[in-house]
Image (cartoon, rainbow, N blue to C red):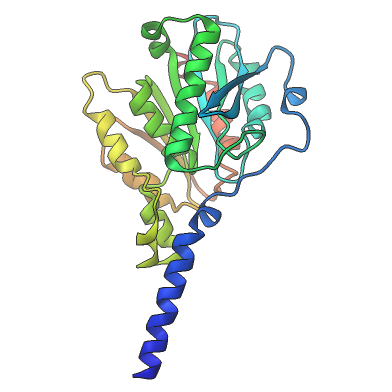
Length: 273
């Protein structure tokens, strides 16, 4: 019995460690080495706001169309908001009318706080309200301009944001189905069941599908994604045939997918509709 007891104790200890330190396993925040405002291109600006006394900021890159679409950008796990500057610059060279708000997560970049499902969604919604107030836009018209561009773990934040904010279009890049299922690919079963931040992209897409006016949804995934398996993107799209548009690129990895994405979207007039 002793070996069995030792095994059970070992499993229990491992489970306790995974549960206690899972935030460090799930989130990989980075900080800026310089003042973010100094890194912004001409015409862009940092928008400051607070979340429960914690200082937060997001980054506004306006396009030439004053009342055009606004894409709220939700990056991946180990990225910071300003990692998207080159991508947005490339898009705006081709599509100057598009505007972007780069959302920074709590604990990332120059933001205070700690990342979690609730904190990340709350910060995103506060950033949207800060931008709306900055533009002096009525909520009714601003909702019609709200779009989502999300990559990797950012698809979890982006989908929950879309449900709450009434986004009219979503571009989901390398999305997972649920964080529990994604954790299973990393740590296996049953440790995946210990995940606290239970993002469920499958459920949020279902919520959006039940709206009287469903938003446009695009999913892109690379077949060589070794972080979030391509079967997850395929599965999300397959659950909503005729509504969710799906495209994948052969041999493209998790982060490399952003390059063909830029080329694909830059020539599409629908992106700005």
